Length: 370
Ligand SMILES: Cc1ncc(COP(=O)(O)O)c(C=O)c1O
Image: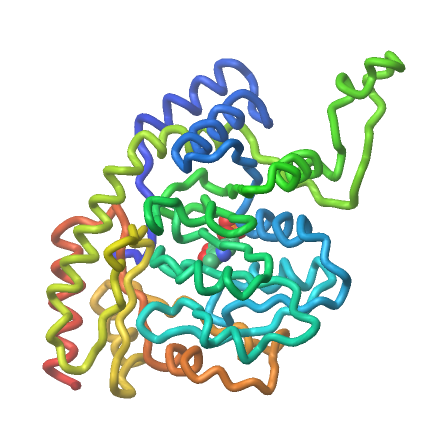
C-alpha cells in the first residue's frame, strides 16, 4: 500500500539515539537542549521550547495568554481536534471559522463576522504549509497563535511561520516534515511567554530542586508554580530530531518536486481542482497535497485508489460537524471540502514510481467515471 503520510529515518537518527543509549541518558537532557538550540538557530529566534507533542504545545500556548474563563477564541473548523481541545481545556470557547477552498486556510474575511465582545484571541493554522495571510489577521488587533504543525519550513517575507504571530507551535509527530517520533515546540516573540512555557512544562514545577535549594540546602523540595501536566520531551525523541534536521532541506526539495509533479499532472484535468501554491513572497512546506473534485465522486475515487493500493484520506473532518463540538453554524467551504477534497500521498518515502502510480490511477479513474 502506498501510504498517505510518512517520514524517512536512517543512520543519522540511529547514531544520535545510540549515543544517548551509550550515555545511559534517556530523559530530558543534553539532546533536548541541542535540538532546541538547533531549532532556534534555524528559525532565527532566541529560544525554542521543546515539548512532547504538538497537541501539548497548543495546550501550553493557549494557557500563556491567561485569558478570562469563557473568552472566545476564533479558529478554523478545518483542522486537527487538538486545536479546539486546547481552547476548551483552558476554560475558553472555540468559535469555528470557515476557510478558503483553494488553501484550506482561514482569512480575515471569514474571521471578521465572528468577532464579538468576548473574542480574545485568534488561532490560525498554516494548512499544508501554505502560509496564512498573517498581516491582515494581526491587523485585527487580537493576540494570534500560529499553528505551524504543517509549516516548519514555511516563510512569509523570509520570516518563518510560527515566529510571526504572538505565539507559534510546531508538531514533530511521526508523519510531519520533521519528526521526533512524537514531539512539539512552542515559540514566542515575548520572552516572558517563552520563559514561563519552559518553567511549567514539567508538571508546573518552576525550577529544579538544585536551583531552589541554594538557601535551604534541601534540593528535593519543589517550587510548583502552576497546574499543568507533564509535557517535557526526552533525549531519544530529540536524538531523532537532530538526525532529521541534518536532512530537512533535502526532504523539503523532494516534497516540492512531488507537489510540482502533481500540479503539472492535474492542472488541466477538468473534473478536479488543485491547491493554491505559495505566493511570490512565501515559502511553502508541502506537508500534504489535496485535490478537490467538482463532482460527487470523491468517495468513489478514494475507494478506487484504495483498491489499487493507494491510501488517501480527508484532512480534516470539520470540527463543527463533530458531535462533541457541533454548532448550528454553517461553514460552507469547510462543508464543501468535507464532501469534495481528498489528500493524496506526499512524503519523502515515496518513490518516483509511487508518484507516477498515484497520478496514473487518478487519471484512470477520471477516464472511467468522470
Ligand atoms: C494542524 C495540527 N495541529 C496540531 C497537531 C497536533 O500535533 P501532535 O500530533 O504532535 O500532537 C496536528 C497533528 O496532526 C495538526 O495537524
